Length: 515
Ligand code: NAD
Image (cartoon, rainbow, N blue to C red; front, side):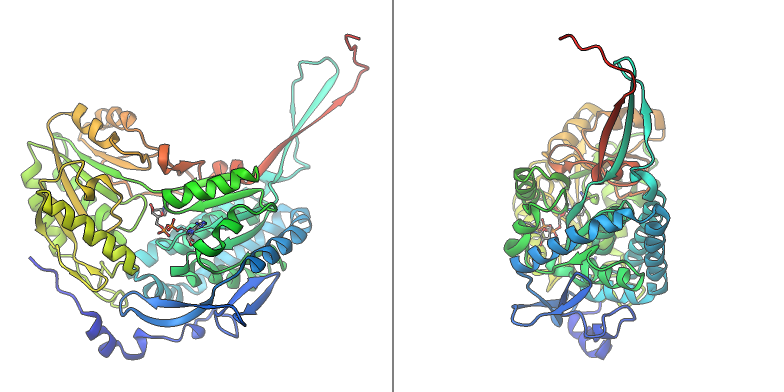
């Protein structure tokens, strides 16, 4: 069964200028275009820096250039952030929240243009763009409410063990926050750190992924500039992680280093931050299991399985990486999942009917193909999909998969659904936990209490009962255990990461010392 799709060659011809749009024309583009870093409120043009292509994944054609920022740019960005931070922290929480609110309203105003940018720069389908824009405005709205959480005048009194002592405990912003973000949900994953950092009175140096430097970085600078953020509070330096990433992560001016990306790079970033005694907040990879028990409502399990595996081509840290299905329903589940996968519209994400676009880059495409091919060589069967064409991967369902086959053992990050059979819950739990990761997961069982018991046994930060792992809620702690990261995002949990708690005590009566 093959999904119909518009080939990239057709897309180039049919879509004409749409395929290689001038990104300078977006309503929120800076007047001289995107080929600049943003430091201390200035768009500093590429100049004699090297340039990096902005590539449209559907056509694999370069549609723009961004500067390969240098260590000097990073130093300048941190210097600007350090000098702007104190004055920004001294603004009232209401003033800080109102700037974030103004930026949030601009995300709404430019919704359609953002959707277009997502298609061109990320290969993201319209549905995914809408989901990401909703998450972005959601995290900004919560950040606005957090703005007074780091008000040094808002002190809490704590009882003292010493007679006559008054304890004052309060929070203040951590200072300067270095943020490194990935390409898969670039606007949201940058914003979930940038918005609370700014609302709480920090200043920021942001390095977006090179693959999505506009929507994950420069666009945020542009939004906050239009929203009236003072110069230097948000600085964006584009460039290769291998060239400037370590300077961002290991910079002495950073109080916190927030990183979202792969576990491999996260280990390096965490090490560089720890060397400076900066707080590392690390959101890393996942290998999420979707467990379908014998008592599952199969309609709901399949619905969740399709959404959790194929949304944004499976390119989320919280996508389903493995389907673990009880042997009694295995054949039916595989058949239904394969049928649904084969019906998904694949093609150019500028077509609003398309649900599955290209994967984002060449290395991503090659990794997914290699993992599938190696697993098929080891005995997995292709039940649907399995076609690899330029950067398009047909939604692929694999049966007969074992937990140690490459496509199951590694984070494949593609529109691929490996289905593994289990015979009892102990085996399902053991299979799910047999990974270094511990990010998200899901359990299907009509008895929700029984499902919760299974969920508690999964060694992950998050589990969703009778749903699928792809959930993020701005009011709830988001994060993983083990090799999936350190720390939590959203609401009061991100406040912990981005502030320092301080203690001032006042000895109000003369104290009796022992000598
Ligand atoms: P990546 O680790 O390759 O890159 C992430 C960022 O790190 C990019 O900005 C990149 O330029 C930068 N970078 C690369 N090398 C660096 C270095 N040596 N020092 C400092 N920075 C460096 O990840 P990716 O391919 O962009 O994203 C996919 C990965 O991110 C997957 O593993 C996915 O699971 C993970 N992810 C996790 C979450 C989460 O919330 N846990 C969310 C999204 C993605």
